[in-house]
Length: 165
View 1 (cartoon, rainbow, N blue to C red):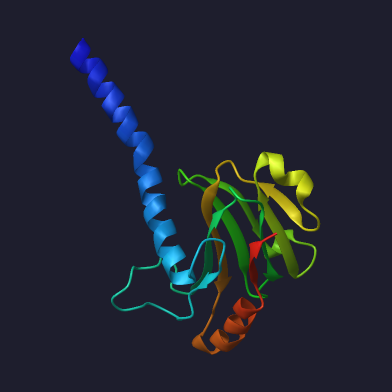
View 2: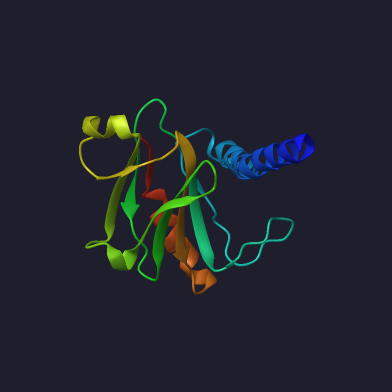
């Protein structure tokens, strides 16, 4: 009986911890590429990449940010991409808790503020999204139908802001 209880406790701990470990690894790579937390990190390569992780959709050009709202809200703003644009937020256990895309927005400009529950009142401007955890990941996907789209996508990426609200 004790061995069964021990097995279940260890299994539960491993199952609970595994997604957090995966997210910590992804956050670490984004932080390294972006130069810190709450900073944009952009893919600027069209199509499949050699000697790199495979992407589910090589025609999706991704901007990412590893965010940390423990010291205050974080803003992500810019302009959507006309061929397809989406923003997804993931909490630290890898669960997706927010997603929107260009067809759901009333305009091409976006302005989201990621905040902890207690920080929402200190934010001005933007759509507030409450993060269930202090740290997480933001992904923005843009569809590139051809390599010739890349200069305009890079310009779109450069117009983004990721940082303190």
